[in-house]
Length: 340
Image (cartoon, rainbow, N blue to C red; front, side, top):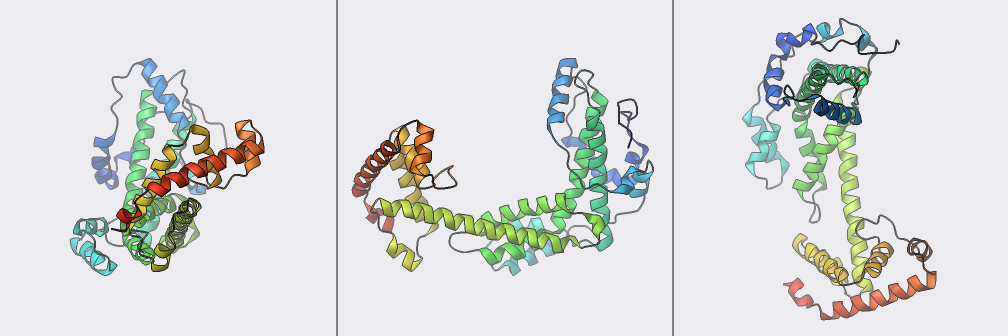
């Protein structure tokens, strides 16, 4: 493939951008575009550098190399069906979860036909490929206002097509995440994570392999929900282990599985307050030893000694002193208020 340069990739709007198939998308993305018509040379340089720091990922296809591909892709009518309020209401009712009715608006888009799905993925990735081509020839020393505007337009149009895929598959996310709801994992949290996973799935799906997107998306969302539940359970176990090391008995809570979300957050908040009363080194050691906060694994005494520049025995002494302080503070905690 020949090397692309600013001269071989002119910064002008291709004719296919004016086709009627893009009228609705154009009308909806125009208000979202940034007006840079009044920017000076220095501002354009800054905008160019910022755009160069932003990767544009897409699923490539050998057909995209044809100069006539844009005209072909946008020549056929997509024919998306209008949104239906009844679809959203039915989704809420089937969820089996007491949800606010406004969430039903997320699920008002009808399912996509196989050919519509393929067209949306093809258009989205082609638009991103066009944006990536223009990004590849950006030059901060010779910034091009028209090229920056063109890149932003291509990305915005690609996002519009991505959103049509996402909204048509939101009912799938509802049906999956509701199976993972429990006292420690709310539907709202799982739904938010599930939608993010769905968007990632859209961006990674190769439309040209002949599979339906729902098959791929189901695996991605289900795996993400399972991981969310497991990570939250591990976090709870770590904090409970820390509470037990401070002689706070949570065994009764565990046996009855009756720790409400509110009570759980109160316990975490109380622990956070107590840690705040330790000095800087003590706090760091306790968090690292019990994998709290930003620490994703339990650190050894030796690794902490190396980090702090002290002996292993000194770290042990600091840990013991910190635990004594926490036990003393825990003794003053009126657990009765947490049982209320």
